[in-house]
Image (tube, rainbow, N blue to C red; front, top):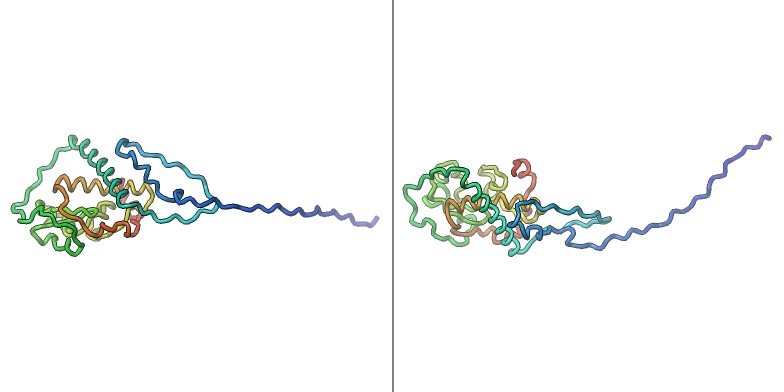
Length: 237
């Protein structure tokens, strides 16, 4: 009587120590797998990407920087896709009659070699000979002064229009913006290259082979990564 019963607390048991061993870093895990494009010209179906298992301690992915040969090979594959799309749709639409220039410059379609952006600017809409660059390929557009001389595309003459082709934003402030599309994930590489190659095919069909090369794209690997939000906002397909 009168004694207070106290519940004896259970003794604490130390939890076993667990040592987390991070997985060995595999550079291929975080790099863009360009092999997914190996058979892109043989099928129009999209390739499903595999969901990779989580890594306890992921490291920052290294910037992607494929070789010049890889870039060239991948561009050619997308050019084939764009060319096939043009062939498949050519019979569905009637070609509009395109007006011809009344007088072509004497140096029309003459090769210019590799030139700088400053040199390209000399062939603006105020000149008889007009040139433009798309992804570094320089085209002579002098045969369409109605478009590139005094017409609605006059702002493109003497400039590089690559980024405008990607965003679909047809404005002068989209010109002369240089980025490396290969520093993105494979899905965006595919998307951006498709848009670029579609424009290149259209330019080749109308103006023939390129007459030169813009030097900015000789070192494309050193350009900054292409923005992503601008293309998303434009809702390009």
